[in-house]
Length: 118
Image 1 (cartoon, rainbow, N blue to C red):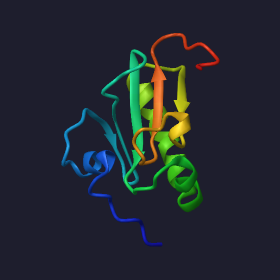
Image 2: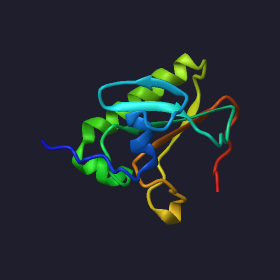
Image 3: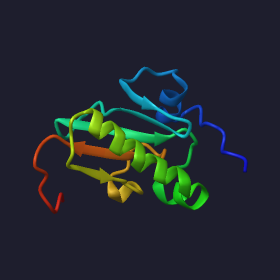
């Protein structure tokens, strides 16, 4: 299987490559986890695939095992951060408030999270 080339204009591709610095929390063969620069909870980090897909739906279609890796990485980092209750969020599309079009998983925790979020 041929993976998509990194997008030289994509913020997350540039973080994955090390071109743009980030507070990296974990790196694996298929994923990179780093702190969100605008945290919405005491613990808020992102887990992104190393491969570039514009959203979670396209990633899931092309690389379902990588979606599982994102969730496993989220659990490992949450545990390392001392969080055992957390929310996982994929925003898919502009109307869902996706602002960076590279699939990414938000992990939020460290406080009680209300539902529905909005």
